[in-house]
Image (cartoon, rainbow, N blue to C red; front, side, top):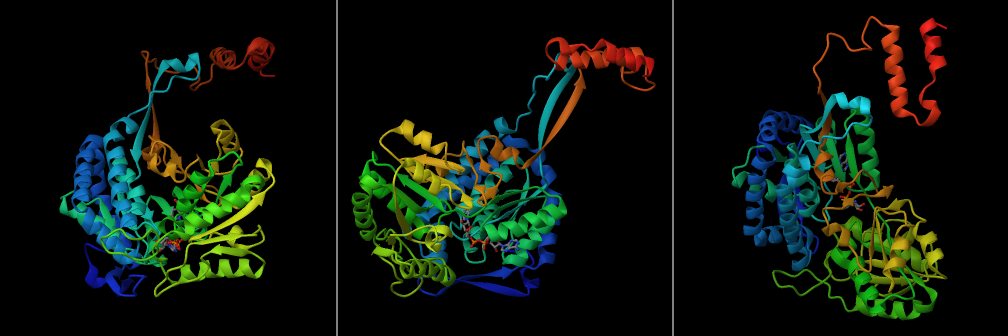
Length: 518
Ligand code: NAD
């Protein structure tokens, strides 16, 4: 744990800068017992956090927002030290966190307000109906390494705004930014309803074994294990998993915008974005020109790990393992006949991999079929829109997609045929900056979704249905014991009349048979 009991922790995890190999910091490898103790402690404080209501929580969340603004440079320094991202990329995490926390802090009262649905039938009007949204007590958030501050923020803030206590297990590859977030929470003097536990899979497993709701972001393989563990415990979960997002470039597209947009979508954060563009389908008439423009845009990118000055667009990969996957995908494609138009190999020291465009690829190649999570853009020529849609949908994943066209109606028509949780027309990542929209993967890209306005908070709540009589009550309801056949016939007939349509509303003979006991 980062805040208590570190002396009881058996070992520590060294965090290294992937560009230089230098140690950036150490964190405890938290034992499962300590995770269980942390969850127990959170349970003690959660009721009060829930009781202060969304307006009370707003004050603390907005204080944290101020802290994030005041500490942006320090946060970016820490983030760069554990990721070797360019400075601009490192500054995106805190800005994103500030935007998100403001959205949910200010709207929580509205989003969590009771619902009073209208009764489904005239008979039900005798009750006043209320749906109350009551938070799960402890939400466990488990995050990957690609956005060390934004990934925790993305789910921790809505869960806190909903009134839950939160235990966060950041990636063991990049835990330092999450530790900073816990420092911020402590520094503003907020109630102790947010804890960070650092460690690897066993620590994450203990979070899954103790929390009341699991919000996981990471690989599909780990997500599957977490789902199984949650089912075993009967606790709800939401999974944000891997992707292999397609981009479709139609012949009527603005090819300059498409090339620059897809270069950004494929290379931002060195391609280590769940919703990065991972494969491109281009209509035949514009294929050659598009490949030329994309190759030019990608080869112009500057690669390196800068300090506070923004000199580079593409940084290092998070670790050796990631660099090996990218190299394998490129090597296997080339061995099977693909051509590299730019990039294609590791460069310099550390885990840098050149921004790479591949052509002459197909769906039998790992660079098209598997998630790469690196700076590669495989491009395929397609005969027409229909073939593009068919190939785009030929994937186990369905996280997001983009369509590039001069005709926005056509873009939307194509979007509605794609199996993906989000589709951006003439843009990439746009859905990620729209918290009013759900962000969730289809297929093996996930279960459930984050955000989506009120749903982003209500997902961390249990909906409680409360009925109250609207009219003065009698000693007995017509259907209560002992059965009185006249009242029963009347009640069942009324239910049937209210629910059915036409002559089938009333089946008097059947009701009379009931009375006669036949
Ligand atoms: P990962 O699955 O290896 O690890 C994710 C987290 O799970 C880490 O904190 C890890 O310690 C923890 N973990 C590992 N085994 C566990 C277990 N048995 N029980 C509980 N926790 C366990 O993923 P990664 O390599 O860190 O991240 C890359 C993946 O994340 C990619 O597949 C990427 O697409 C995905 N991702 C998805 C989204 C999204 O919103 N859909 C966002 C970012 C990243």
